[in-house]
Length: 211
Image (cartoon, rainbow, N blue to C red; front, top):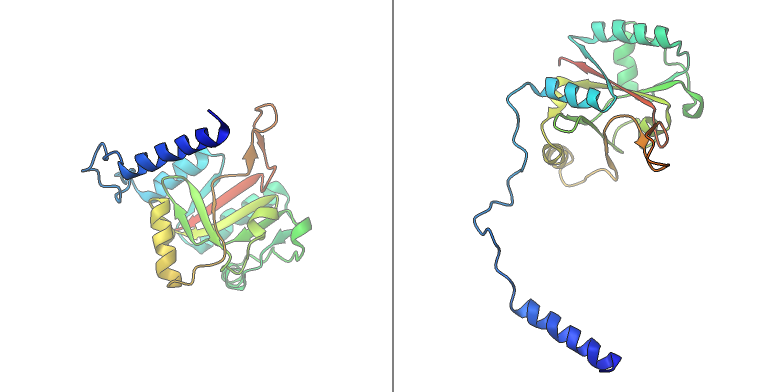
């Protein structure tokens, strides 16, 4: 048998298989429903557990006054003096609560960057961000430490829920980038040794405000 005949035989077998498709083994399965069912515990608690298991640092705050108090303490303990924040609305809210330590204007040389987010995914401990935010694409990636300020109203259970929220919020005009950041940057590509902070921030904080 030459190459041409072998090729023809293979193509004929493919055509035959396509014309006589195998029936689904479980025709009653609902493929549209989620495999993961929401747990009975609070979404904030589930997010905190998942996020901290991924080496994230979680702080719950009852209000912005408590947030600023906790933030000032962490900044002082880590001796950060180059804090970057691009989002005007967030800067204003923090300033109203007596936090003004974000005068650094160079992302490349900052100690830490503060941003908001779109949503928090409880099941995976992920922060959802998009290019539509004032912070843009780069802030949460290039800073060595990322501090995310979020509200309890931004909690969703699964990735699917976050994507549905995005479609609702942006009404068919989705941002050019939607990012799911799950804990600090890490890789085990080199000799299977886990290294943190290679392709992004080495530390990630989430301050969750009850709002």
